[in-house]
Amino acid sequence: MPHELPLPEPWASKGWKAKIFDLEGPEEPHLTVRFRALKWRISLRSGAFLDREPPGRDVPPAVVSHVHDNLPALVIAWDQMFPKNRVLSPEPEPEGVAGKSRTKESKKRRQK
Amino acid sequence: MNDPVILLAHRQDIDAPLRGLHATVVGTRDAVHVACSKHRHGAVWIAPRANLFGLFLGGPSVRTKDQRLLVLEGLREQQYAFLRTMFRVIVPMDQEVRRLPREELLEVVAMPNRDELFIAGAVDVGDGVVTLYRGNLEPLVVPLDWFKASGTGVRPDPADFEVTDFGHAVRFGDYEASTHAILYAHDPKYRTRAKARLLEQDKSFGGALRRLRILKRLSLSEFPGVTEKEVARIEKGAVKKPHADTMAILAKRLGVKPEEISTY
Image (cartoon, rainbow over all chains, first blue to last red; front, side, top):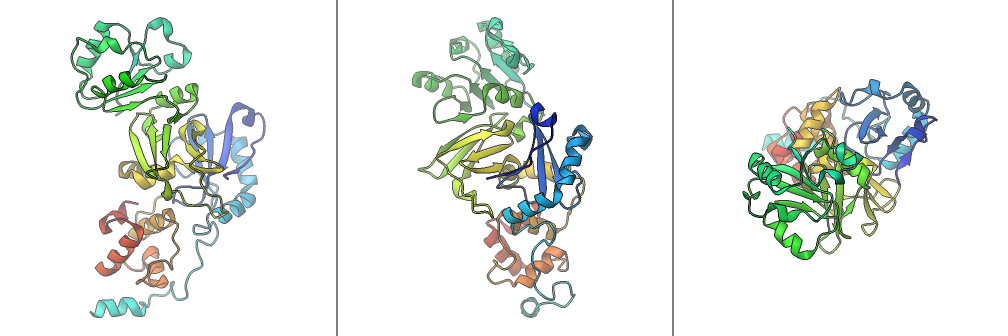
């Protein structure tokens, strides 16, 4: 079931919707805001618009503010729906990933 | 560029949603024949009613390169057989094809990005596929088992299917998949356009690998033969050029060719 963010009036009555689908694109975690056949995606990490088109300025500021106000709850919803593309910690990292040393396996492969 | 839209209708039958298409209207034999000659490379034909197909008879063949037809009414079997001789794609409105409500559908067809939205679809449980039709009537076939359960355990129900949200989503029971996710995974040209639209893009190979892995809902540890650490290092860009053997393992697990990974 998608996670729907109820929007304030008058925007809800005018047909504005905001939701996280059960299956989303692989970009950074986001919420999709839609008005009729137009859609905008807002990052749950930064609160910024993900795409250059259509322009973010076309979304009513009250809708954007409402999304920003609800980011903590949206982050929880996203992380439950997409545990392999989490908002705050992308994925538990194995130890030593940040370092520059090669893994044993990759070393072995290169020695072949 | 979008193909032209041709409305096969009498002018008196055109209501406000149809007018919103800003289409070329053809409602006489001569007008149909002129349109067939003019748009030999391809067009989207829309027939609000299924009563004017006889107008094609006696003129130049419409069976040229890429003609597609959307009929907003049900078709008789004989009509379908006749139209199949002329159109590469026919989207009929029968019980098996679930479509957007008429006004939403026509609004999507009128959009400049109609090829990025779905207007209709049909589930074939026997073959395990769903055929989705975009606003330009181009079909896309997606295996049903590609739609994985969400992290909250919601599973798609193919028996309860519809296209929804002005073509931005498809619904299987309680489960909704975004059109963007479907096209991103199954249409390389769409993927290229979608990546170009991003305000900030990670163009690295690691970024592409990460997006594809997320799309396939795999974790770092689900690549037998490549350690979790190594996958993470590749995604972070710590490994500039993965070894060919590693690439082969990654690609096989992700279900793509090695050279395709960077397109995601």
